[in-house]
Image 1 (tube, rainbow, N blue to C red):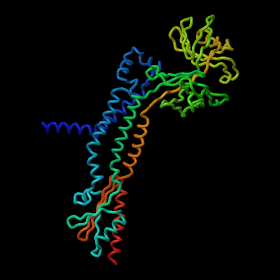
Image 2 (cartoon, helix red, strand yellow):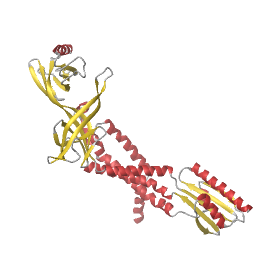
Image 3 (cartoon, one colour):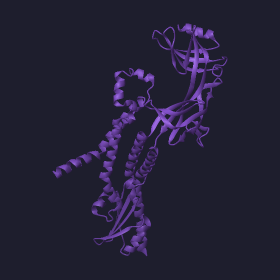
Length: 461
């Protein structure tokens, strides 16, 4: 029974530690990661939801059931990461004892089997006038200080370099597991979200990826928001933002936090407080805008949709109170809107100008739509901030650093061993390396030539 139990345990261990399992899991992770690239994660854009049949559609329900909209938190994705971690642990448990023995208790005598398995070897004839002390000194001069052993009336000398390099691969294993642990810590105890703060306003909460409000634990005020644009080829500003900058003040219980008054926040220069980091991610305007459609007067919020008297609807894309920087020769308020016809036809994008009603009428007649005139609005800019807290980030950084060091050592710093066996006037040289065999052979050849020259000098004395 015990033998059967051991046999099953050995098979399980062999499977968990196999390279095939490693490759299979890595390939699966690469394939399923495509899902996270193709399918939007977190809060879904309404356009995407509509493209897959809406929230009541079969595709949406299937994707939601499989966790495709939050793939990196899905149980099956984290299960793959756990399986890869178990695989790395099993590989380490199975192979580390043998590697540890080689690194810490090497074979310091050269047997016939080791000589046959060596990366390279050579044989020299030692003159009778050269005693063991002189030979040892000559070997130490060209190969490093050796460990001496007497066995079967022969002198064995052993030299090695970087035995610890064999452990580098297990450092890489540990780094991968550390990165996974850091990611898990971030997933459990961290969060990501978004907050929009109108200029002059204060917020104390944000919207997380599930669309729920979460408290910050302090207050965040937007003192000022500015955006600058690149110059257009024909002169004047283009629609391409050059820089958008927020001036923020953090407060707790109404008191300003020292060092966080009028703090500057721009792209690639985040602001961090109490482990929560704010990134400048977007901007826009908010407020109320007035339109007239015939005799009807409508009030529409920024980026909102309103229904028109004829059954059609309009969506406010953006509005400015002075269009002259964008349309030289034009002045006054202007709004860009999408109009969805009542008959269900394709949406039409219009530019509605407050000071140019004739142009509004021409555009409406061209598309057989009601005349929509923008009257102006009271709006102010808002800054859109990504909110992120990741307490596991330092664990990930440590794992990443360990991985870089481990990979460098594993690929570029080989463990090299050289044996010398002296007896009956012959000196056998054998060497073994874990990497860079061509360079190691050249080293053995240099040692051989240097020893040969030294022995010839000793013979002529």
